[in-house]
Image 1 (cartoon, rainbow, N blue to C red):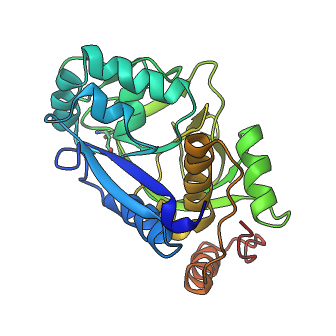
Image 2 (image 1 turned 180 degrees about the vertical axis):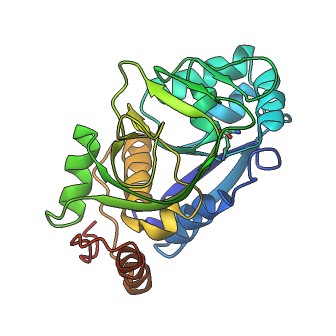
Length: 273
Ligand code: GLN
């Protein structure tokens, strides 16, 4: 198949309610990197007007962060057939990137600083609790080394053998504790899941859950390529190789941030896809 015959449907979870923290950046990067390669792209809002059929039709899912109140509204909507469709998609390996409020909702529950526990979908074996309105939020730059075994291996191959470090920015009150689900990575700089156990995010089937907000994919374009490649391979059941793009600016941005944080990690190699 030629690139022009390939189509990527990006499902965007509750764009109006869950875009408080700039996570649309992740949608834009997946869209752009696909368009630059000549693929057809559709962005499908998976919001209150969407049906379970809409959810079933997407190839990659992006979910952003939200304030506690919005998370409650989302969870009232994401029930029944829609919840079932989300579960099926993720269990069957649809790739996705879920940030902050989204993983909290994919876990068993989220307890906000004020108010009632919000029951999640229980797809990810994790729980999140906000210790209270007077507790400090976890805010700041975040650097992690991806340790989730299959993902780390696949990203490493794309990076010509370099260790996959993700550079991001976190802003959350909730603290997440993992059950049996694998962590996405270990914290090199910042706080991650809870500021205590050194873990960051979670990785389940092909779902990436993280506290790193919407500059995640702009700062780590190889992760966007992993999502695109994984989505297209699952959809078309064939090996997909992506043409390389010029990521010089992103790589310079990574170097600048690592310098600012006084970290010397070798991450300069551009991805081989
Ligand atoms: N409301 C959640 C918290 O404070 C999620 C915030 C977010 O998505 N950034 O933990």
